Image 1: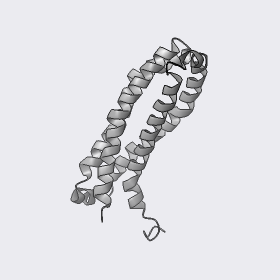
Image 2: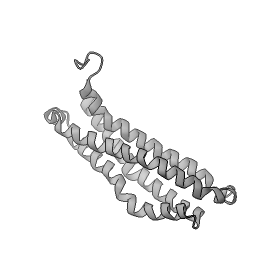
Image 3: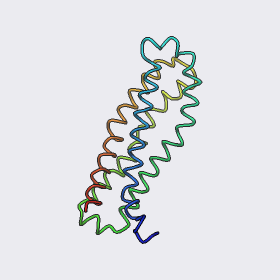
Image 4: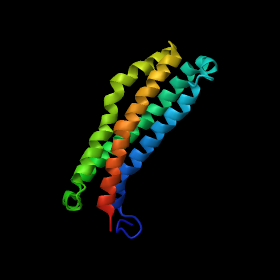
Length: 163
């Protein structure tokens, strides 16, 4: 089915970074929403004894997923820049793929700021305050590089795949 009649691998490649950044953005929002519920003022006292164990499990299970999404976004973005680049240039989408790819990698630039709050939560030291820090940083990352990467890949895909 490589003929494109039922499945066009080039269309899948052009859309892949948009799909993976959509997943990444939704996952970041879910993290913020669900972990934020545990730190609401009315829940802090009851969530405090659970946070260390919960966050440790959450972190160890979620990290491979997040890293995988960043990797898929990055490498499919790069692949798009190398496969039939003249077609992207003709559609005016090259720089949108470049921007989306760079912004997807930008997700990792937040690690030095986020890692200490993750470590503090997993060690069980001042978990609610550390979760507040993590939530703040997560929302900044989500609303800056994650949202911008998604928007860049939306424009790239729309410009490239338009009829």
